[in-house]
Length: 440
Image (cartoon, rainbow, N blue to C red):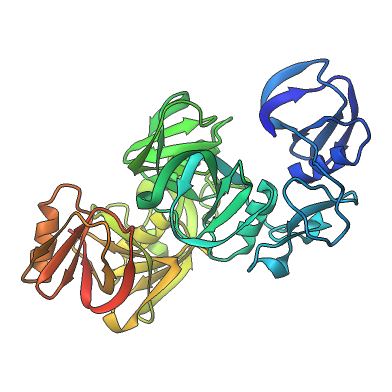
C-alpha cells in the first residue's frame, strides 16, 4: 500500500470496508480494479488514477492481491484475497498460539472485538522477547497481538510480511531498520526512539501520561515523543531519527476524552490540558482512578524516581490493586505508607501494590514489571549480560553507592562480594535467591 494519498474522481464505486484487508479483497474480486483508496470505513475502487487527488494522512492506496482467490477456511498468505466478500486472510482465535492465517469472516478474526487503535512507529524494531511469529497482513498482525494477553506490540517486516509479537518493548532492545514498523496499541509506548524533525510542536509535559493526553487533544497528532519534561507532538515519522534510551514514542488514547473528575481507564485521556487519569489522595485505599489535575494525583509530591524491572513478578504481600497507567501506579504506591514497590501487568494494566518484596516470592513473568523507587531493592533476581562493569562489593549499600557514583548506571545487581553495574535490563535474567537489584 501507499499511505497518505487520496484520489476521489472517476471511481468504479465507493463502498464500505471494515479494514484495509477487506478493501483489498473487494478490489481483487472486482473486474477492472487496479487499486483501491482505503479510509476508515470507506473503500473507493479505481480503474485508473485520473481525476482529483490530494495528500491525505488518513487514506492509503491499496494494491489488489495476487494469484488465485483462496477458498473459505483455507490457508492463505498476505498477498492472497479470499473468494467471498467480507472474508479476509487472518488468524483465528483458536490459532493465536500458532499464528496460522486462514480465510474467514472478518468478525471471526483474532482481535476482531478489540477497540484498540494501533500506531505504526516507522523504522522501529526490537530484538528479543518474541512470543510468536508468522507471515500475514498488518491488520491480521495487530489483531493477533490484541488477542494475545502478554503482547505489548508487534514488529512487522515490510519486505517479508513477517509479524513478530513482542512481550517486552525495552529501550535496551531498540534498533532502527528501514524494513521494520513497530505497532503499538492505544495507551501503549515504544521506548528507546527519538524523532526530532517536522513536529507539530514541542511542549512541556509533567510525565508520559500528560504527554499522551496532549497528543490525544491535538488535531493531527498520531503519536508523541516523550522525554523527561519534553513532549514532541508528531503528525508522521519523517525526518531525523535515532535510538535514544531516554525517550519513548507514546500512542494517543482511544475513545472519547473523559470529563473532569470522572472515572477513567489507562487508555483514556482527559478533556482538559494538565489533567490525567490517576488516583486521588482520598482514593488510595481503593485505587479508583479519575480525571484530575496532575498535581492532585496521589504521590504527585514525591520526588523519588522509579525504576521498572521488566519480566519480574512477586507473589503475596498485596496491599491493593486496580487498573491504571504506570505513572498513576507508582504515584499510588508513593502515597501508601507501607508500599515498597508495585507489580504492573502490562496486558491488563493491573497495578498491584506490595508491602513486601520477598526473595521466596520472586518469579519471572514476561507480562510483568516490578517498579521500585530510589533507595529501594528487589531481591531474588539476577541480570548478567551487557554490564557496565563488575566490581567487588561488601554490601547492598556499598553496591548502591557504586552505582550512584558511576555515570549511566541505572541499577546495581548485588551478590555476595560482587556488584554488577547496569545501564539497562537487556540480556539474560534468572531467579537467583542470593542476588538483589538495588536502585541508587
